Image (cartoon, rainbow, N blue to C red; front, side):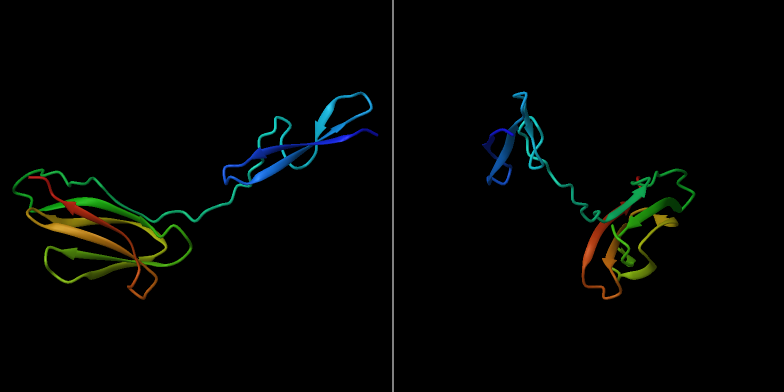
Length: 141
């Protein structure tokens, strides 16, 4: 039916691959299976696990009225998978306090005070060993 020609090219992983070109009876080259017709390699898209997410909106919490001792923010988190995450908060030098358990969520926090730093920590699972993300929240002066 025609001859087959192999053309080498290098992929991003620096491995040599070959494009197989076949000549039809009419003399037009076509490519078969291994590559696109322009010689560029085909890439398989692999889904990678999403990264953990932890943020506060707004942050810093606006100062607002000085007569109002507490400010409000909304904490949003996600472990990046179906795995359950534990959300803790540490205020200044106090120990961590557990506040939520879920793979993802949103929580209104209406207890942000002046002159304090709130460190929110998202851990993987219940074991409290793998820190996925942490975030400092403050109230503006």
